[in-house]
Image (cartoon, rainbow, N blue to C red; front, side):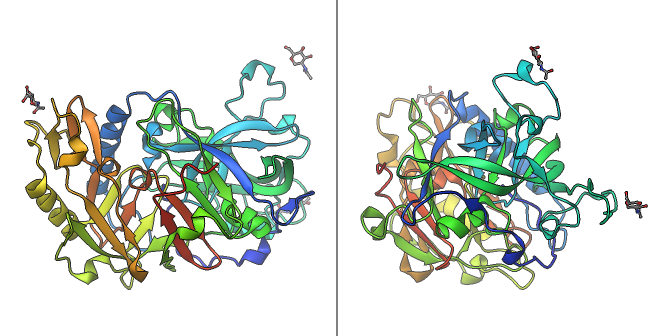
Length: 453
Ligand SMILES: *[C@@H]1O[C@H](CO)[C@@H](O)[C@H](O)[C@H]1NC(C)=O
Ligand SMILES: *[C@@H]1O[C@H](CO)[C@@H](O)[C@H](O)[C@H]1NC(C)=O
Ligand SMILES: *[C@@H]1O[C@H](CO)[C@@H](O)[C@H](O)[C@H]1NC(C)=O
């Protein structure tokens, strides 16, 4: 999911007090169950709808200088998202958040009601029911880390109750606004103990609008857990205590019941084991989009044959456009248009399945799998080569999705790299461990390791 990054000098990390944690030993890390929303309401329909919307918006979008998003968050399709539970407040209130590496802000829907016993089970956060809720003062340096609303009240230093108002917008114009605050969160560490993390900065959202973050399309989420690279993200705040890396495994969305995997913050591998067998590629930074985890895609192969794509197609250009982002909050994959067209043409030539009589709207290549018991075997294999020599070979189910009965479509979309960037969305990441090693600025991945506890 993409937050509109405005070119502004990002305040340095030290402005944010490190989240304060009671009683955790040094070798512990955090483990949060990661789930596809269950039960799954016809994922294929939702994905198809989502894609249509993405397509529409990307065509409509005008290039705006320094705003980096031609594509829309996968949040527009609730079923295309992965969720984590966050227990926030004292006593803890448990809320479902979308795990999103493509944005920074952690926010939850908030309600100002005083006696909220009628609202159970909770679908919003009730600050008045928490003894530890603490709104940030507008003069607090922390407040400068969140975008302020266009018509924010002027900050009065001397008034005690001048709260920090924020307004955070996503690529499709969806937004959340409210009070920027701090709260205690309750987390389980790897040893099974409860840890209370004090002063986690988050947005208490009182106004929420737009398709990505409201209505049915949000699909039961109560907010977003931004895991991006900016100082206010959950990964940044907790990384200062647990080790500045996180990893996850997104399980196959077609499995039923949906298996649970974990978002791990800290060094979940203890330096050994399966995760040491990861392949690594450097994480790149783009000063125009400090939130995103960029990697350098070098080539794409179909059935072992490297496509002739000019290297400039993958580059981040002088104004910050182009490049490739790893985003858990976007469902489908996006490729720079020249590469996209070549991939579609080559896959079409190599696929040993009949082309569907009718395309699912929003997709350029669909096949008819009626009567075929193992269509995967007849689909060409894509291979992505990243900088540093790491090679990513996803199974076909990561890039072909069933959009209608007996119809599967190539789940990749085109993006104009002159105004946007390529994206490895969550579908493409399925079944692999991904580790975002922020200190060493590298992304690790492996097809093994998802079965680990
Ligand atoms: C809240 O509502 C419940 C049930 O309606 C009532 O029993 C309780 O006294 C109320 N508490 C406050 C503080 O108003
Ligand atoms: C700021 O708040 C103080 C205390 O409430 C008040 O006396 C003062 O007039 C306010 N200043 C402005 C510019 O509103
Ligand atoms: C798929 O193929 C079957 C049998 O060959 C045919 O009956 C059906 O209409 C086809 N569906 C599409 C969408 O092409």
